[in-house]
Length: 502
Image 1 (cartoon, one colour):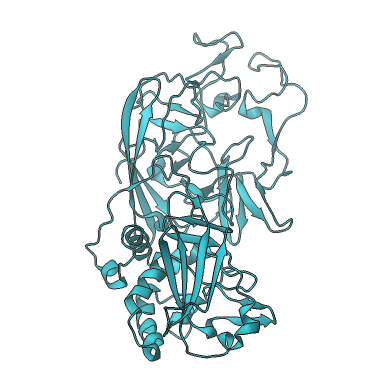
Image 2 (cartoon, rainbow, N blue to C red):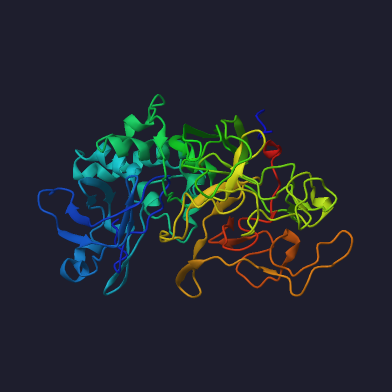
């Protein structure tokens, strides 16, 4: 079976560059060179800085640059209203730009400038659109472009007018993952991809409806974006993958489209990484599928949670692979396929009880190094942490989004920024092994609770996550990969979309 196919100064003077990125792509650490120019003099920068505290990926920059000393040397940077400045950030010859104004920032104290801006391909495209504009009409030109970039319901536009400073003032504390609700996702995606290959592309060129960036190669990529809106990922992707054991080559294809209410993710079910490595022993050969699921863009939590079901897939990952946490194996000593412990690998439902956990270290489900294997129809699917798409080197906001659950809420890797301890750490599940031994009746396996069965665990609320393995950070609810049961999620906080039916 398969999924349903019917359907800016960078400044914050102690550091100024917080950035919301919107891409799937490689992350490359590097030394970033930052320059501040007066609009009328780009031959000689006002100041230059080198920083090693940057990540660069897919044309984006995330990190910080110290410019606070400039307030002492050039106080008019914060007081000269209307004078445009240019920020340039370069890494290995790739540069990003931002046109900015002093009034976009606030003098916090004698050594700090407060402000926030997005340094990304879209702002670079805007700069190229106005780079030859006379200084006295730069603001006017940018104000004219702003309504094209921001939708009318942007929160900064209470008066119905969106100017360029509104774009600059998008506050990092306003849950930047929601920026895609106010920015045309298609525009941002086109800008991101276009600037990756053509740093001189203009906003007018990006706005053309016939611009087609083609499929983006995500082979073995570590993703970077933390946006909870599936529309932020609306592009086509491809990857090369290999069935290691059978020595067979595959090509992964994923396409994400969206409208105001939902996204459609279509894929052939092939991952963006090699599979069936030395750890795997698949019962059936992996084959291409025809997957199409609908992901709500604005999911809402409902009054009662929905349990996982063997009739649905639990999630779709951004590499196009399904997540199917529950097995069809259980304790059934009467089954002709039962092993010495009385466990059978197939034919069981949740109602039978004592369902086997495929993630148990001594299970015999033949999963590969990505905690995945194939179903009888050849569908490759994960049973837990995909060991792909994220790593142990998270960005400033934690692990990226790696997929979306069937209710539309995002799935993150296992790292998050703990604002209370001010540390980056792994999310901890609230489930623990039960104490003592299992019942030892005719229909019970007996023995100690060791994780063989999902019923070996109970929710104690002792971790970071709720009973569904999720939590809310900066206004965004999401599920998190964990190093222990339930591994990704254990129920749904929202309404499951029917397209995830098997």
